Image (cartoon, rainbow, N blue to C red; front, side, top):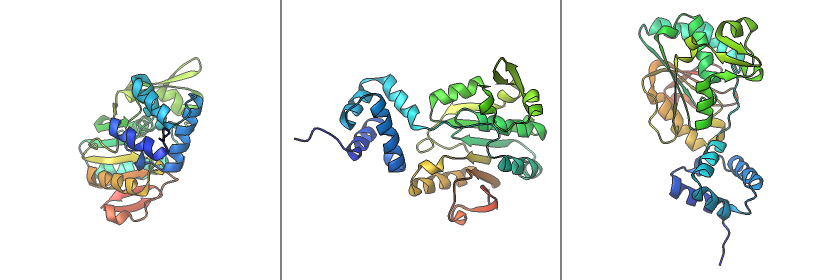
Length: 260
């Protein structure tokens, strides 16, 4: 009798117990990451690894957090943020005189939503902005809420901006309260939880690349429904929307789409 599982059997058992469908992710990328973790934890096969996860809540939590890839820095992709500051947010400020709702979906360690808050502050729009930052990774969210970063994570921020918006403590930089209190962090599963509604801008950058095309389609439908007409969706520079019109989106700038 066969006692070892293949990757498909592991995915099926994992879905039955946790409700997380690993089939939604690109198989080769996800399987490679799981095999790397199994090797580090000295698990001989998928069945042994599954039993290890089910026997320990901490092991399962670690695995769920491991599945997300938290590489993030402030002002990542300068061209995109320049377009946001020079065109997108000023346009939203003119067209929507009330509250501006921004959603950073898959916010990782918080660099993206804090960058958005800095830009909105410079445009004198932060006082009427509501910034939601969500991620499935509890550890990343805890890090984000602390708002304390090293020089590498500050990325491409000019020194004058660092001085204005961060407090330095030895080799670490803490985001100032006027920025940190503008961002609301919470745990959220993009695939199963209800999206943030009535958004003026949604950021989902460098997240699509890990999902299969049908999962990307599902997410784009959700984002489109969550956006106000005239609102914007911002994706990663390595990502692509083949037919934005089917989601009522029009490409305004590279990686920036507007809802019709």
